[in-house]
Image (cartoon, each protein chain N blue to C red):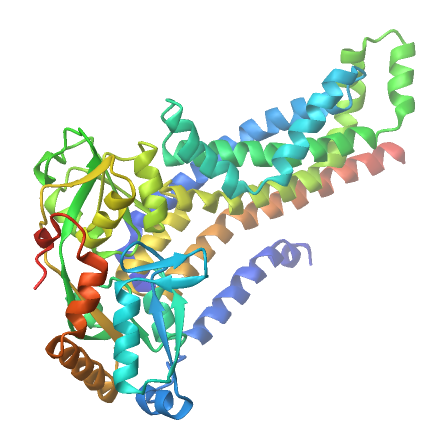
Length: 220
Length: 274
């Protein structure tokens, strides 16, 4: 198993790089898009709420693979060239953003409505109240479920393998099919994914513990 | 205590490692396939179900049909008997060797080229079909042969297939994109994800027959003898398979099957068929 790893080290490292790249891109953009659609969903404006709802329900109920294949196969035929890596990252971003929107929405709505009312009656605008009063409290509540989304995102990035996106899973498939060492290759791939996801998992637990600890001190 | 806890997250990694080390020692059951097939009066073939002319799922009746399938049926009848129960398990270039090794299929007849690398892992029968690798491009493409595959051109291949290794040798500057099966590879070609699709000509002719906007260019640049693969250590089974193939050629059954699938395809002799 070790020789499989050392013999194919450049391929494994290239795969790790593309997986990390796609994950980071998707993480950044899905967080932004997800937050925007979470805010749309709880917006006082009815049209905004409907738009937010449609977006979230669409992307969280369509399989990731279908979204990715759409960007890989259909969009290029409409004249917009998209590589496998781009199609995979876009699919990953849209899919994850729907779940992040739900997570953030739930976080915001779990903040007592009295907080918003109090902020508004103190003369803050809706945006100010959201920005300074509601969101800071919501973020703390949102961290553990968001951590789950990030971990899922890293694992889901293996969808890139399906559209030749050069990620870990893709390289693993190639190595397995040329060396016939299926067991060892996928074992190594599994360990490499764990190396990305376990620290992420641990980091989220740490943040959660630290922030909930801070809350307790404030209450005391 | 605190320090101990902070390392707890390494435990899953450790558990995974232990799980793996226990897997390495597992060996394939060395059951004699020929006697088992005769005893149970059944045989299981690994076949393609996405490859026109060789093995394709017919949606109207759910049966897999093609050249490989007819050869497999004929071989089974000759080795085991006319009323043998023949099972077909769909495989891909990527899954077929693991499935054979695990004993999920008794033999593979799935557009599989006999290569030295593969001979280390499985045993091959005599060649049942002489194919060669070629290029499929959109009609009017500037690519006329493998010589036109320069830096910046993208060639689509299928993961686990021998053709990908070949194209890297013949056109080292071209970028190779490997997709999971032929249907997807052809879809990617149609979407402009690559400039050419490369694999064995028999498969490319099938795609071209389906979609005349795509043509095979430049002739073949490799020899790809398709053979039936069986597990190592199945000498009796392999000998019987070879006997069946020889007798099929002699009594004209092979020619009938060949004509049934390839008789109407223009320019097919380019493939180097015997």
